[in-house]
Image (cartoon, rainbow, N blue to C red; front, side):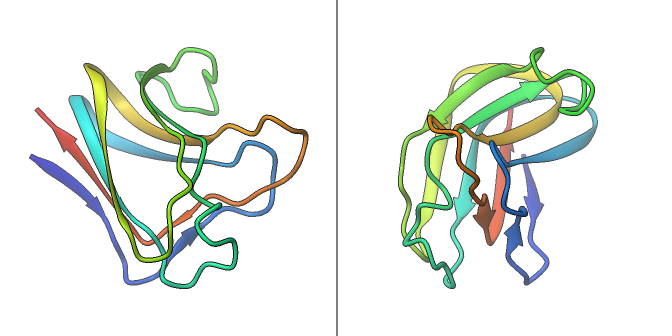
Length: 121
């Protein structure tokens, strides 16, 4: 089973430290991985999608930033238009799927993509 996010427009955060994206399911689901389609229009040469932690949680990112279970880490960088497939190291049950860019330096950055497909068991 899959959950899609695609509206014909690219998703992009504002410039911020550790930008993130969260998808809420109607009920807890077992997440096994994700497919991310990168934007064709990227100024950063794919650096907008690198050093990304993929997590699953039972509480929203806003409510419980530290209660997330990491399912995978995507080092990247990606490139414009590429389809990146990232499989979770273990299947994790949760109501929220979260992408969070982890910045090693105290700088601001973007998190961008065109489409996302979350694979569930």
